[in-house]
Length: 298
Image 1: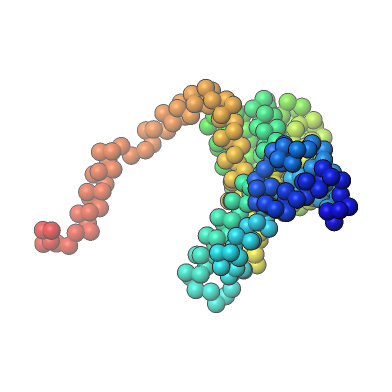
Image 2: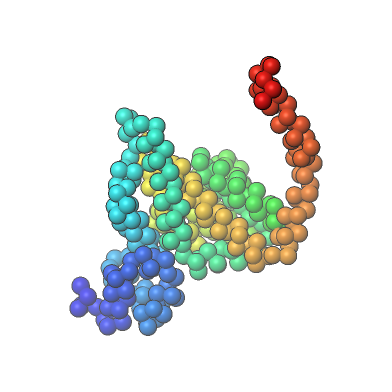
């Protein structure tokens, strides 16, 4: 295929073939620079090989690189589905491997330019709505709690009716975030659609950017593999949480002074709910006394 490409596209193709892991970890700007070409050329190359854009190519490269690393490390068995006859040790190993791979590959495939655009929109938003159902609802609640801690007005909804009514009240200065691993969760897609109809900036966090939720203004893609026994359900949640943490830290960075003040204030507000050092010592001493056999002076 290389000879049929334009010279600039050939350089991009050769770079991807020679070092797919580096390409997966590079932004489109960095790859274009490495190949002495333009970002437009990189995008043309992606479309020539049947990808919609650079984000989709990076995700494919990251997934392939992760699978290759697994094969090199003789971890093919760990990448397989959990079987009914697996030992508990094997189950633990498979889940740990799947979760770690999901986090690593999500980071490798992250489109930093899209991430930056979402962070900027959230930083300037009047209000932020987060929608998610099932396991994604817990991820949404985690994001909302983090945003709340740094002083951003935010809400997390998981009920279909509440999501829609909240979305209907959004404005152009607001941001709505829909979280769905499959990208096909009807409640989440409908709420995000309504938010967009009201003028809000829409963001999707999904494993499948070409799914129905992919209409969002910005799509942040995760890289988690589902399995029959749902070890991937934990992986998808951790991949989503990786995106959430990137959003939170990015926001805290650009709002450093306000975020630090808010975090200190909220920490002090709940400080009295934590056990003091003296109370912890007394509890530990009492626990040790209960667990010490009578007559044992050691």
